[in-house]
Each structure stands twice: as structure tokens, then as C-alpha cells.
Image 1 (cartoon, rainbow, N blue to C red):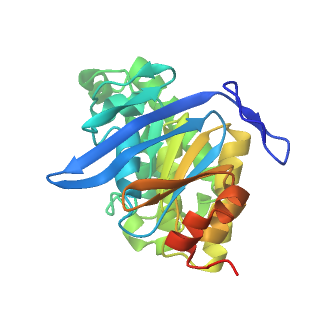
Image 2 (tube, rainbow, N blue to C red):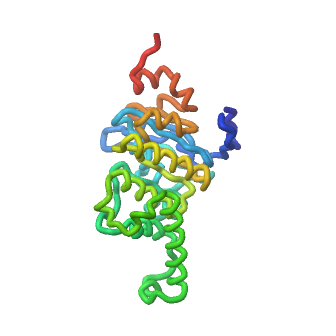
Image 3 (cartoon, rainbow, N blue to C red):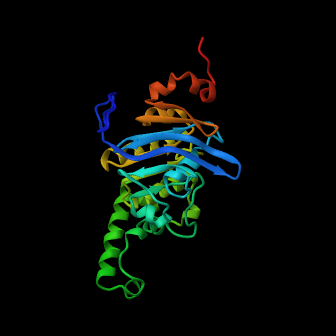
Length: 272
């Protein structure tokens, strides 16, 4: 892999573009505890970038910095070539960043379709009065948003549950609905926090297939946290490894797999 400012070509011939998100010397503290310690890495256009590490390594905190939920005390977050100022969540969403959560965050009493429709809220431009009357621009906007959501539902193969309340769904399907809601916002950068957690083998295979399809068919850049090393090595173009808030590895799956610091701290296997 030849890595340049313009991007690189993967082993399977895919072309990855320039830097979308650049984390520069990020340090994040909670009181006297440093959750992230002077970490730098980038996320490039069109790649699947994994963040891995043991429990307590600071992975979710890093994802919260990327998504704008946390503001680091030191360092800078650059997005599309410009330093990013502190923003509210809806401002981050309007920049084209969407995410799923480690603990499912859906509206349990609403149907699958209604949950997915909430992913379009940041795209709505008509005012409250116009929406209440539901005429003209508001009606056209509603129809357009519904069409986009229905396409996402078809893409993720959840047509059969589109009218089902989320509370009645099994865990694996809830994870897929949460992915659908994130995709409904048509993100340029999709953040996935442990998308395979709690799934059986078949559900993991389905989710892996959908993640690859999102990246391939939509061209969506993806950053994910995942504990299943088989999934990480199969899906990711590059992997950054954290341990106790520090970066201990960064590179292709093969490079990370053979990194002795990563082996000692995370994989738990030593060389002969």
C-alpha cells in the first residue's frame, strides 16, 4: 500500500482518497483522568477505518470526539481540510456525520419506518407551521424523505418489519434498524460503535455484508469500533489500536496483526 496525501490503493484494487478527518494530538481528560493521551491519526475518503483496543482503552471516547460530542482539552480535529470548532450534535449531522451507538438508542414505541424517518430530521427545511398544514413544500419534502427511507429499508432487507414497533424486534434486527436510521441521513462519514456486539454468527455475517455494501455502493467513509478481531481484519482497510488512552499501533490489518506492541497488549499472543 502506497500512502500519499492524495490517498492510496488497497490490496484489492480499491482507490482510497485524501484525508476527510484528521485527529491531531488529541488529549481528552475527565477530571484528573486522561481518557485519550496525545493521539493522532486520520480517516481517508472511502475507507473503512477501525479503532480497536481492550475495554477502557478510550475507543468510545475517541468516537465521541470524532462525532463532536466531546471537545478535547488539547489538540485539534480537522474536517475536510479545516479545523473544526465546537459544535452542537445537529450541526455535526448537517456536516454529513452520522453514527450508531454501543447501546441501542431507538424509539422503542415507534415503528421501524418512523425510527428511520427520524434520520431525516436534519434534512428538513420546511417550518413547523408548514409541516402542520402539510401542503406545498412540506408535503413534497415529506414524500421525498419517505422515499429515501424506503430505499434504505429495502437496502438493509427489513421491508417485512417496516410497520413493526421496535420494542417487538429481536436484538439483531434492532441493530440493523439503527444502522438504517443513520443511513437515512445520507452521511459522508458513518461512525459505528460496536455494530456486531451481542450478535450471533449469522447476524454478524449479515451486518458485515451490509457495512461492505454501504462502503462500496454508496461510497460512504466508515469508522468503526469493534471487538471481534475476525470482523476487523476482514472489513478494515486500516486499523488504529489504542491501549490505556494511548495509540500503540496504526496501519493495515496485516501490519497491526504483526505489531508486537499490539500482540502484547491486545491479542494476548507472544512470539516464539
